[in-house]
Length: 186
Image 1 (tube, rainbow, N blue to C red):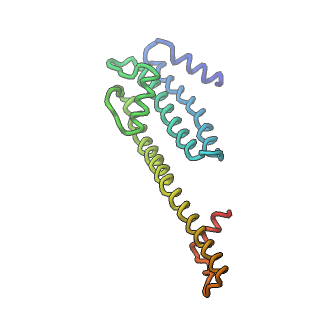
Image 2: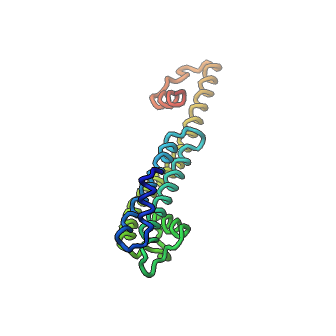
Image 3: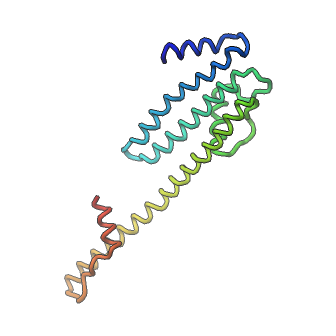
């Protein structure tokens, strides 16, 4: 962290009332460190790359929400604050992102409620991303396996037809078969 960030952190901790507490929002600049994590996960090409991306997005969003609510809500000094520890903040963030909202932990300050609104909106997008990921997992594997099986059966029939010298065999390649064989080889 730069010296400027450290100075802002120091100023935000001075107990002089609300004059310097606005500087605590500058701590949110630390969340910029999450961006390289998400970019690295997006560029990852190893096994389970889609799953790594899902975990990176959910993890980064959960951590960013927890850190933000701790800064805004945790150091506000308001009465009836229910989010007291970072563990509470992580729990609240995950429950809010998943749109479950148990109600056991909730923000009480206006700033905390603004954070909650943004986290709910982002959470809807994250849930949509996860739903799309799950749908892709369920549909892609079945189609791919079925097409491989059909191509295998057609190749066996073509070899049998050639062996027994059946007229009209082997069939010409259909556009679907050409497209599948092309996708499989590339």
